[in-house]
Image 1: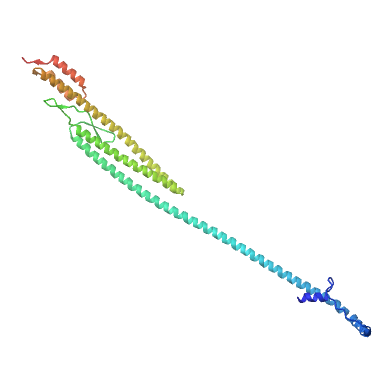
Image 2 (image 1 turned 90 degrees about the vertical axis):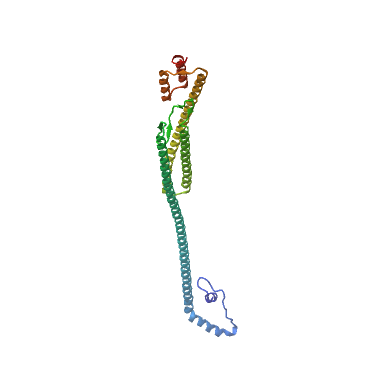
Length: 331
């Protein structure tokens, strides 16, 4: 404010003063006017030097103000730069913290999937042990049954499994009254029951394997790690191979069961046909006189009892031939 007041009163070379004080002159003061003019002439060089000094001071103050403003602007720019750098560092730190959180979550997922995979492996190992134990039990039971069947009179033929006997055709044992004795019916029933039990057990194992297959597929969909997916794929391949083996066993057992049923039906039909032929012969003998058998007839009947593959029609034809040729009527 002082510099402005000084400028308004004194002025400068470039800008004249705003206010000028004019002294009052009268006619009676001529002497004083002349004296004043001499004083002005004496002091005029000093007055000329004073505006230059004031201008220099003003320029100096202006420079000082400009420097201060520049320094202030520089300080403000530095503060803004520091603030921007601080914000950028904070953003980088925040991004790193977010990445760290993501890595921690992935690590936790991997540990959980690893634990679940280890538990599944242990569970599969236990199931394999149980399956082996069940196989051993089935083999022991089958071996016991084969031993029991070997000790009996009927002839047996064994299947590819080596544990399930198949009863072959056996001739009927006839009594003096001509009645047939089905000695191998109980054995055939027990064989059918054992086949059905074994088939049901293998079917249950196949169902369990299919459930395990579905669980492994669900785990493979849920997991994200490549290594765990590869382990699950290996388990799936091994499980699929086992399931294929089980399916082959089931198909073989079904074929074997069909063969056993056909064989039993064939034996049953042969027994029924032989029984009907013997009944007819008895009826014919009852209607005729008592006869004596020749040695030829005895030999033929013995051969018929030994051979079980004779067809009932052939037996009937032989009997009719014996009746025509070799029967001697009593008188």
